[in-house]
Image (cartoon, rainbow over the protein chains, first blue to last red):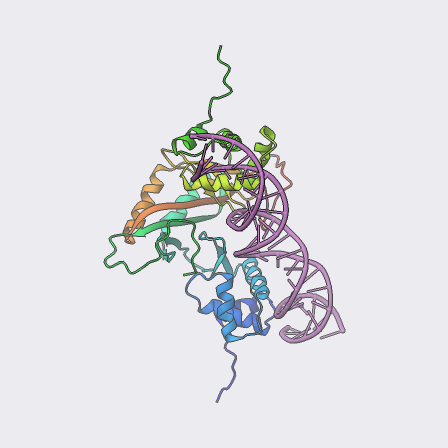
Length: 161
Length: 161
DNA sequence: ATAACTGCAAATCCTTTGCTGTCCG
DNA sequence: CGGACAGCAAAGGATTTGCAGTTAT
């Protein structure tokens, strides 16, 4: 009967591959990131990690997240609102984000043709495409029984998503 | 012979239309903004305004720029690098930005088809298109006599443009 | 007159860092 | 062992704000 508590998270494995030292807190943060299917900011990551292991400091989360970004394991996003959001890098296709201006919720969507399109635009301007940033902001069409009291048109200041 | 120092700048006129009080510093900032053909950040605006009138404080620039953004006269941009950049709102067609990752320079370009394209994407997802953000990052192709020593692949920290 | 504005400095917010002690490989 | 890493609190950089004094209308 196996009894190892091991079973590294997907991101923890990437860390190991890149030769990063796997400390207890690092492992916890890696797990939180692996489990996340949204775009948490540092504070949220800190909250989630704290649940699994209370002796983690925000500074460590900041350092880890920055390190993983440099290693290409994470990608930083900016959906407005002042704080950086993170999500695991995806190997294959890219996806974009549509932010609901009424509640800050983020919807992901793909568009294979788009990047190729932009790649061409860059070329036409005499540049080699390096990367791009694309965010769409929209309002949900005809809301049947609008349940949200959080309609903000002012400066965003919401949570993750 | 007319001797009025008047001759309000384009943006100053917009301010007046919106019923804003035209103080000396406001007028100066409006002029700086009207004359700018780039994407200055607050510090740069402050610098330029100070030349025309030294008794302007950064706080005022911040307040003005925020107010004008709320009034729809200015648009805030984020090209990375931590500080917000501003440019006058354009009535007609929109344009996008290509940032040269080697020197932070910003090239503007248009693509009429693009917005319509995105508008359709939003609709398909059940949203009304409100706005979008699109930035392209690239490297200049085959640089003949590269004069820049500022090749940074790390965290950006440059000036305006 | 009076609400809108300004300056200045203190306050916020997010993020980074110096220092010192700890732990993985 | 030795460098990589963690905690804590102080430092930073951008932007906002409280307060008291001006000023455009």
